[in-house]
Image (cartoon, rainbow, N blue to C red; front, side, top):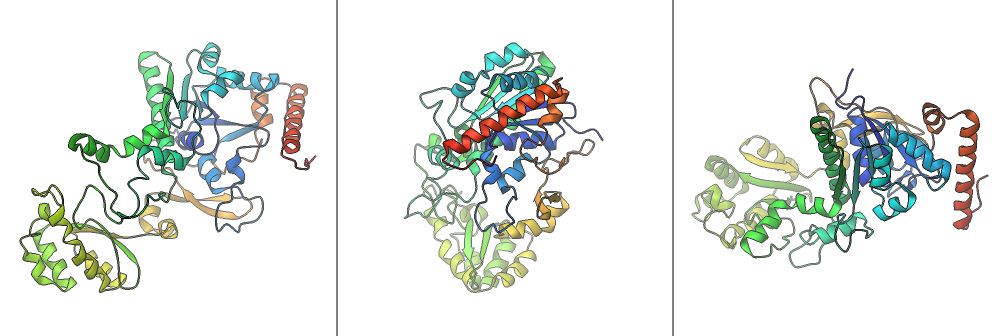
Length: 425
């Protein structure tokens, strides 16, 4: 069956998350993605993370998600043979995606102008930390640094305490989303207008985009939003996370109708609050009714805290499920998400046979197309799994392939020696 991007060829020269996750999306959508790895492999192959007691040799979770279904070659890009292999791949590619520093790519011979000479129709898509212009264009970045500079970390944590690191790699994944979107936008421009071009996005820019409402609020009002713990800084009313009597967490947005609000107050044990003039409309409860400081709306929070603390999570869920005009959700763990019938029904969670641990759940394609559905193409590749296959397709004979593989092995051996380790061969 044809898929959205069937026939597109993508060369991915990227590591860790921003570049590979974008390439993973394109692969799920049907593009052929060839991943170029150094002799030692992408470092995320080996990152086991926390509470991971799977057998030795199990690929890292980050690598599994971002690289399933790709073809991978391991090659020394600094060697003459390695550069020529990459040039041959680029010559037949539709797009080249990368999160390497542009100064390093230019030095290695893979800058935009160099690859454009090889393939004038190439879309060259690069993501970095802080944008391709300005004094920090070539500055290194990790996920936390992106959230720190972009303002997201400043808005996360208790009102009276220090900023807190959010519990997901939001900066990297946001950059990956922007890279995938930008790549497809440039490919469409090439198809419609015959113009191939360079694409630049950044994690920093993606952080700003993720916080468009909050940053725009600061620009319009001239006042700084302040982090507000379990509540949103720009929604001063009841909207937030609360603890139940059995120490579970539940999120409450609002009651959309006055009937549902009164029903909530009756169940919570303070029926008189339902008609209290301070909060007897949705706008008042959300701080949208001439309450610029959010002071009146904020006074409702102690009532909410006492209400949720008076009953168990199960009791609250049973009641709230009976009130469709009250927007809420229990706070789910990652394991809850993996088993959520809603996630399973929509294909957000699928299964794959992952060596050496067998059938494993993983995140499926999140874009659902009725006539050209996407799919997971298979497990992530082993290091260098498709090197010989790809080289044969590029026209290399076995003598050349053996020479290239021998150079790759020697480069890997030297890497072990540089690290003070005993080479495995």
